[in-house]
Length: 250
Image (cartoon, rainbow, N blue to C red; front, side, top):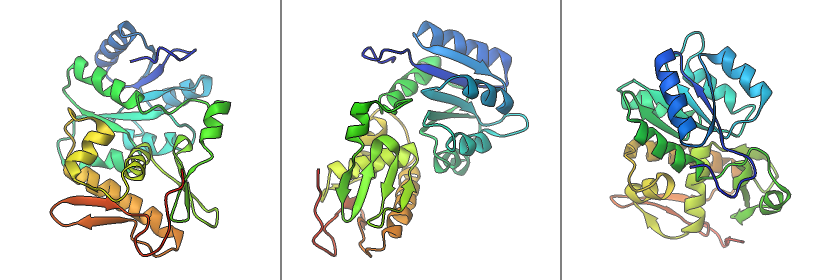
């Protein structure tokens, strides 16, 4: 849903090579109150992103020339826009590939427009701004734990040595959930509900994959702390004091 407190409308870029499907999505999202632009391929995406910033990109996987996976990787080097992958691929490994590359969600083809609209609203509620305001810059001073500085607005972690670790949108959401629930064992179902919404169906393997990626990045801190621990049969726990005396600092 477009944010009623924003001074600018929410802008969405639809990348879909099927003319009929693209036109259908554009009509639906326009009626829903978004500013929407549609393109058929990666060259169109580059052209439109050079013209204006977008809040969210709806990205088909099976595209001519460059695939959606390739475009997803490239988008993250130039934009903070949220990304929803649209895929007809049935294999779980194919679907999570987009999440590995930094996509925030995926929608399987064929899909209902109502479901697409709900997923767009959920992703936009995570609130990544096109440009950080002075207030957001102040908030981005960081959340601190175990020698790390976490700046969710910028999707980054900094080690005690000020080495920057870039996070995907999904990794940022997961890190925020862990930060705000220290010491609490969270099941995969709870992690899915807290990051995606209780009504969304997400494979538990996706959470395991995201946690594995987040652990690898946290391992660069050099503190030898197991910050995210697996509790066999129950889920995961974020413990910034494990193996040391570090505390959360608001």
